[in-house]
Length: 319
Ligand code: NAD
Image (cartoon, rainbow, N blue to C red; front, side, top):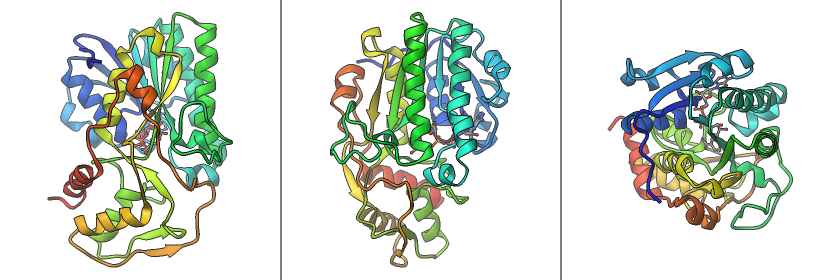
């Protein structure tokens, strides 16, 4: 399926100053879209959008405020809803805020899209909705019980999309269950940084990376431009493909121990990783079945882990 042209199409990217959101904004601007961003810079950075100065509109505001969401959605044809507080441990520490932003904020954005007569909302869900399901690969329909407030919040986004879709048939929803997205602009700093930037940062500083648990837990890593392409495909998919959520992933899994070895090699060597206790809320294994996203969205990952780690190394090690 072709990537749709966005010439002159008005779109909103919530969380557009963030890691995935800012790459999506780049792709939309490149395709001629008229892009508005809504972000409160809780974790996103204005510098991610500096190079687009004058080419996009930026609203600094919070998705927990309905009036702000209505202003942001006004006149838009497609809303790409990326804004959320990510991270399982953050949600375990402060569930109320993660739920308020991820669920309350999403309910506001969906309602504001309806009020604005927006045609379609493509929203970020997460592989965490598979929770305690032991099945591998993870296939849409095989969800287990969520293991963290974050996972519950993303599950609730999908439930909200389903019920808004039923209640307001003129507005269609496509959910994207991202599996461990990585690449340039993913923040290496702070207590809730994701594993790949954290490992690169450790090696950059000559420290040993820390692994939670035995490191034999596995993940399916997605290069950020693959996640961007999934969004573009979802925005142009036929109506028969809408009203559900799709896996978006790299399509193969590696253990965290193997990942650490790859990052170490890409960094030119360094300390062996140190192991600490496992983290509450983390799932053991993750691997996506991509048949539905391939068949109905035309999604296929294009950047394998070797190339992706190399691109991430260039970004984090300043090469
Ligand atoms: P990110 O933290 O870089 O981006 C999130 C953006 O949302 C940030 O710019 C942040 O400032 C903004 N934001 C947060 N709270 C807000 C609020 N109350 N109002 C307005 N803006 C707010 O994270 P990301 O990795 O780019 O994640 C994007 C989306 O993808 C999120 O919905 C996340 O849950 C989801 N997701 C990411 C991954 C991953 O591996 N990165 C995996 C699964 C799902």
